[in-house]
Amino acid sequence: MIDELNTLALMRARDQGRALLATVRRAMIEVERPARHALVCLLADGHLLIEDVPGVGKTTLARIIARAIGGHDARIQCTADLVPSDIIGVEIRSDNPALRPHVFDPGPLFANAVVLDEVNRATPKLQAALFEAMEERFVSVAKKRHPLPRPFFVVATMNPYNPEEETFRLAHGQRDRFAIATAIGYPSERGEFDLLDRFAGYDALADIDPIVAPGDVVKVQRGVALVHVPDVVREYIVKLVRATRDHDGVSTGASPRAALSLQRCCQALALISDCTEVQPDHVEELFVPCLAHRMQFQPGVDGIATAQAILESVAPPAWKKPTLVSAEDDLLDAHVPEPLSADLPGVSRLQRKLESA
Image 1 (tube, helix red, strand yellow):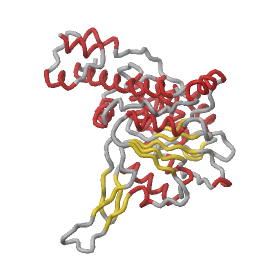
Image 2 (cartoon, rainbow, N blue to C red):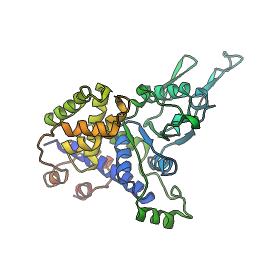
Image 3 (cartoon, rainbow, N blue to C red):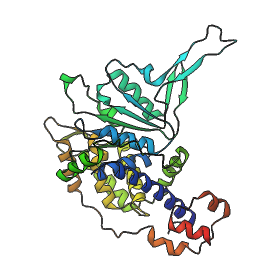
Image 4 (cartoon, rainbow, N blue to C red):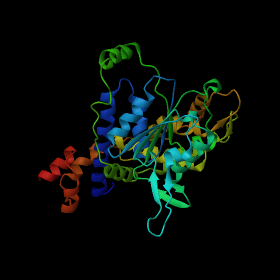
């Protein structure tokens, strides 16, 4: 069993993650799966791509998450006339550097949560600058490197490719910068009725307050690394990734970076699912959202269907589900050092019992 302090850290991270998910659920209708994937992406310290038709709530979901994690959030509406300096920033040159040094004026990219709206309307030059910053977490201006704030979470929205509407394709290497690609889809008949009834004169963002501070988000991201990945599950991930490279409908399979990203996203999903270990069903849920956009397919091949076929071709290992709840009774009598106890807010039932003991 994992040690007591790690369990407490996991439970705190779980509570904060669930609070973020509950916020999105209250603010939107019928977005359970994309909202969960968005939260997983945030906790895994990755970036999210939402690709769908206009008007289904892509930007709204992205902005709700950006506001809920506190800190500074920014929204960038991508257009064909934007240049990299518009979003990265510029260095203001001084005519007398000895008396007044050059000053860097950061752009809107310097935020904890950045919404890149309609990213495929940006030119390839701007896209390259954006994705370099997303990968390196630095930007370079006038031969100087400037670190981006932590956490740094990018949610990019994208409409379906249409050359008549001045959209540009994202290159394979640029898609690989996103940990998860998801879609929202149209609501059901009942969901659309509730949407009209609830949001006709109401702004979904009006009542969104920060749930966690930026520093807490970083702590939760570190807590994700404490979730154990059994060897049999890790072997399952390896088999799935290698199967993408041998499929006839795939021209370029998933990379080792994709395998690492899938494992970390599965750890995040296990955390908010009350599990102390990553399980095969976590891998099954995230395989397509994490890897389908990272592969290149043969002409005329349906990428999502092919990725699903690859998933079904590899048998998952048998598994018995352990949970964080089952560890509570063993921890109720555990001694918690005072500094740690003081640092943990009483957000879970276990923590409240420990602090009142």
